Length: 214
Image (cartoon, rainbow, N blue to C red; front, side, top):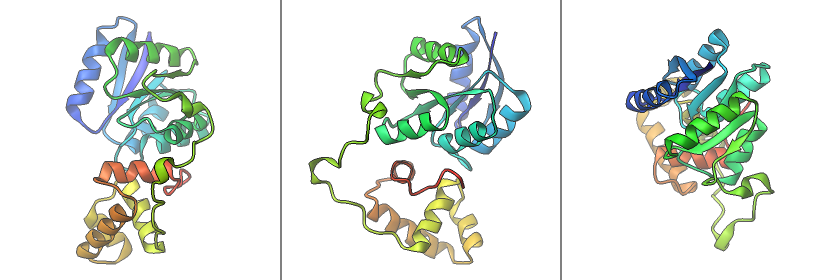
């Protein structure tokens, strides 16, 4: 029996995945987590065979959680579900011990295959994930503009956003007003060409603006 922990901050997603896995016959869901830090704590306590987690999680994102488990010598294999398949993001995941990387829309048979492969210690990359992920990152295509340089305060704010801190928490952490936090976040999204918060975190991860050791 393959013992699995599911980590996703959306309860409906967790319920859907649990229902799928419990029908498989050879998989047992032993826990659920709603954020990256809870996932790490649960894995260290339960020692499941596989941790299946979303990449965009509060407190710790999926790659940061994988990095912490990998650094701790944890034997649990990590499989990541992501809305994004950027080659740099996939390479970061593999570098930190991730055994599987699939799009969130992966069909049920592929998800089960990936979990079983990870439990055996094999690496599975969905065909939907670019094979360029295993090669060197290509140059910026089409002459797309480089993001404008970030100020130290913007980098500090970006790190806190990546940790899942709210505007109010960031304001308290930095000793500034919530309106100032909102203004800095608007500038960050403009400089990194991000249309929403999820995209902002994705860009920050792929460009190394959120250090994994934090």
